[in-house]
Image (tube, rainbow, N blue to C red):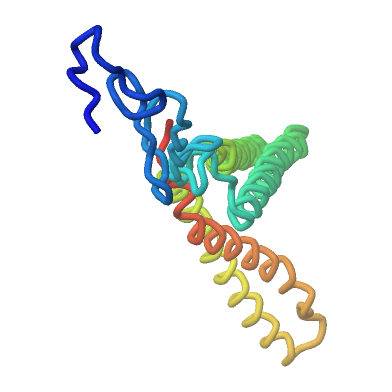
Length: 221
């Protein structure tokens, strides 16, 4: 059936609802509607509802908001503790030097006073050195929250030195303990406890930071 010329204003017009000029095309049944006005677009995956790989999206950028691993947290706490103990020990060394110098200050012998002064200066220098070294673990622990791989390496190096000297101290104490078995009044097994604790703390720092590589290598935004 012909409807005539569609440009003829006097001809028969197409029936209402039949596809023609100005009417949206109806998609065949079974085919999802294509994009256009009035059809909702599928939201890109990410954000809260946006693509994976963006902050807030499922599995967002690693490190965009990554929580510090438990091993790194434990290492950070230990670094703070060791820094505080080392600074306190350095302060005690300085005080001990001052006490030692005052004990020789009342001596009538000038040579004894000179010895007391020299020992006191040595104590002060040693105490200041210990306090200065205590800044290493302290600053490392402070920067771990926003630090990158360099902070991690700094902590691993400090933990390795801690482990080395603790192990060396443990070996020396074990040797002394073995020698004491030949005589009475020698050191007992309790002297091994500080070295064992120090060794365990050093290993905890090294292992905790070694396993937290992804956290310290995360991209910054």
